[in-house]
Length: 200
Image (cartoon, rainbow, N blue to C red):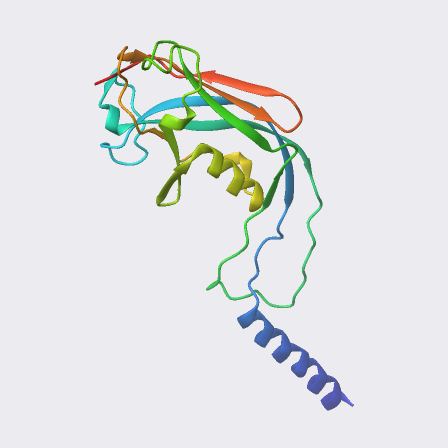
């Protein structure tokens, strides 16, 4: 009888050992719901090493970008599923990250300047066509960035975090403070302004 008990226990231990070598002992994936509360903007210079953020007052137009950092607030957290095992799992694997889900999506982003940019873009007019958003290794229009983010259910926590970059040199004023206006799907509008920058 004892042999049978030891045999069954040995089989269970071997099965757990096999599973432990295959399944990671990752912490449970949490679903975290958040809302966008505001944003912070930083001037970027692509000629600098990562993260390319700068406090200098003069940047070449061809190197200028704006980093957007959304300020978020956690709303709720769903209870994670608990897993149990007899042995510690192998560590040579990668675990899934937590799921962050925004209460609202981004409908639009508008960029304006406090000064005249060129003859067809006086101050406070939409400059979106003069900027492109970085997404991975590519640069795409702001509208395409927002559309692709919606299509892929992109995590808005990091929307525009890689930066939006100027594509056209200003023709009139050289000093600008750019204002970014984000419209959210719940009707709220987030606004922030860069520090003044001289584009040469």
